[in-house]
Length: 347
Ligand code: FE2
Image (cartoon, rainbow, N blue to C red):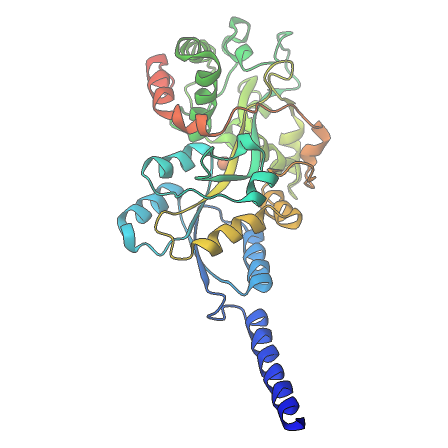
């Protein structure tokens, strides 16, 4: 009897030691791996990966690259692709992968509860994890027409010669136009694009930051940029950057109407994912409070999960009403948006 008891006790110790090894050893074979292809390159992402491995024992292998390059690579790798998860920014880019049939459907109660419906694909092909708004900026020192409240106002003749813009091949402008197409139809969207083109101060050029600098320098009165670029300048250690950000005013468009256009950073599980369950678990992990802040904060984005406050100088501009159009429409209408920009002469 006592020998049996001693034997059981011994077995118990061995078992608990094994469980301990599984839980404590990152990358233990029992926990497996997760292969992430990411178009994001932030230090905080590395902290996220480390914490996930600590919590789950799942080892993360990371490949970083340009979004379109990663999508091409996954396509090329085909059924042998080791990629489990694609992380990228802009619903338009997620759509490019979706269109090529690279994502698989995910059903997860956690993701459906945590992420608002409009920020995820209706069939669970991808999930928004952070948010950015595309807002109007203006030079505070220059005079302005009374009305600068809506995206439509950018096309108003009162703003002739005032508008600096990024090129139409940029995904942010394509996604904004895609939203206008969904809300107002092709014809009105085209009229808007033509109206904005008629208001250009100069041919489209530069990235969002260059356009912020152009407005601050008075080269043009208004532009359209993503919030996080303003956040970066406001939060910069360089006083010159902060002076640029302070020279501009921000307008969150359409607050009396359907709300400001928002886009997402997000992730989808790939069709040939060898470690599907780990990929789902990682997306779920990213919707946790701590992970949401870590994912969004360094880039001055907003959390996708409601009620999580991000520490960013953008908070000074208060909460805003956001357009709750499903982000899938931003992808779906990309080809039409390209055609409209072409016809409108928006280079
Ligand atoms: Fe960007």
